[in-house]
Image (cartoon, rainbow, N blue to C red; front, side, top):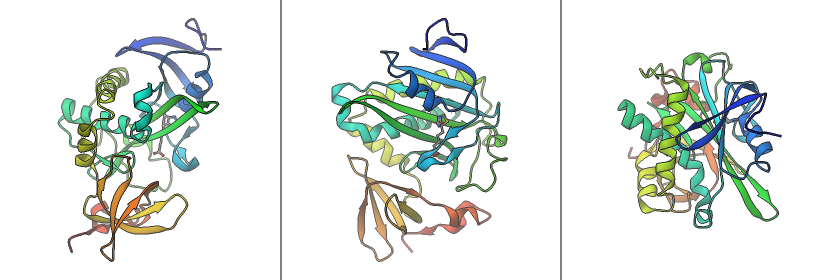
Length: 274
Ligand code: BTN
């Protein structure tokens, strides 16, 4: 049972969120899920060291101690937000791009559906999970991992996608706690416009690899070279195939093996207009 006088962690308040701070845990998403039924409000679990972080498609999320910010925000969508569930995955990504732009003048992009890139390299990944009570949504958990230093991922072996860190991009954060606090504040601001046209416009504006052919893998389909064009209100992606036909992709992610094997990430992409 989690409570405010817990022996395993401390509660602090950041940007209006109760944040449970753990020195070490397996996965903050798992913790948030476990606590979901015990805490009525929204809350955050932040682990200073995460030993069994999970990524999308059951992948492992590497996070060397002291080199990553790893946390999960448990949100309880209100009725009008439930129409926009597909946008929650982007909420954390857009909030991070907002923060990088406003606080560090850095122009980050979003690799559809929800990785944050700086100069076409991944700096943050987001794992969104939903918990249900019967047929109704109990919570949405946004699990966010941010590479603070290159050592966050350099022990990870072969990467599926080129990676970078805030430090490598010239950002010196004051402290993990301050970064987390600013990010939670940015997330709250963005959440207010979840269902708006502005949210979609900004997502489109931040879409990475626009007009470049990329291998796009559909969860239950093959991998194809497609060129991302724009995002639809339901979060699906309009992408052009090599024959020039437009397609709507609902649930996929970039598979970047061709990028990893090249020395620079941009050299393996192809301009759509060519
Ligand atoms: C991905 O890129 O595949 C998503 C990675 C998400 C990692 C974060 S770290 C905090 C939270 N806890 C987890 O176990 N995973 C997410």
